[in-house]
Length: 117
Image 1 (cartoon, one colour):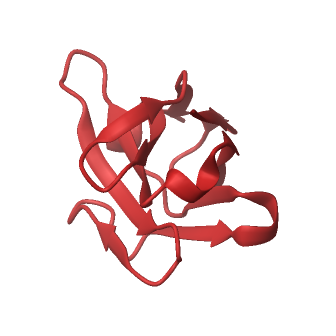
Image 2 (tube, rainbow, N blue to C red):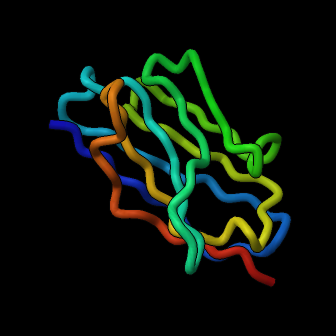
């Protein structure tokens, strides 16, 4: 079984940065990739970024390209989402999830990111 725990959210002002963390536990060799998703208030959950567990391939939503960076620390089994130049539209609950090469099947509890002046 795989478990993921996401954390690191908070309240920041527009233009500031924040780094989210997603720590994986358990049978981590079963993980193919880790993704970050977000659910803005009143909207559906959307894809933000993903990285293969090998760290060799990343993918981003168009809305965050050039501002967000996903990276993995293999020694810590942790995936980070560095978010720069944050905008109010980035306000959402952010979730990380592990992918078993078929689907995202293990989800974190979510961490709130609020961007407001």
